[in-house]
Length: 228
Image 1 (cartoon, rainbow, N blue to C red):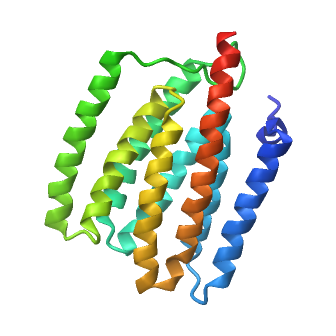
Image 2 (image 1 turned 90 degrees about the vertical axis):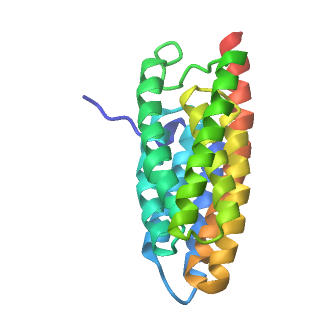
Image 3 (image 1 turned 90 degrees about the horizontal axis):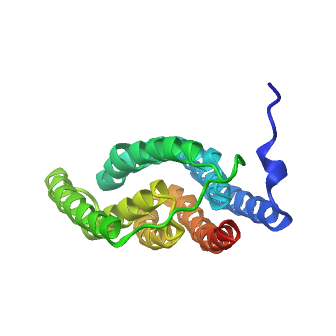
């Protein structure tokens, strides 16, 4: 079976965005005196995942699953137990479920996933689950002595919403991820104040935010094209 290069499907803009993201992340890593190669690999996998998620390719979800494992390990080292638990126990399993749902729902046999609509009932269930998950995780993190508890708790809510919407193949996944990116930028700024080795994580989530903005725009295009 011939294996096709997924990068060949990227538009000129998407390829440039990916190159810029990889370059900026790598450059930020080279600037810090103390090197943490795990943060570099996590960041590179993350920005690559987002460009394919933005295209609606299941490869993006596979890379998201890998990123979740790397990011969970990084969060553990800085006692961001909320991030660790969120990504290993919530984001990773939902990414796995998303792989299944995306594979089962291609758009006309292409690599692109079919964009789905969420009804009022699904939206109500999503917010109810988000509230329950956030409440449970808050008390767990408080008991564990999680660093920066407030922002970590907010991150749990935004991460759940983003993961749920991604699994449901809804364009607003990118808005939720964008909100999560902003929270994580704040979290890693606080971490970098204590350890400069985490500076690349700030840049990582800045690039994530830019990619998620593009993701929302492209999914709106996909939705209109598929409906037409």
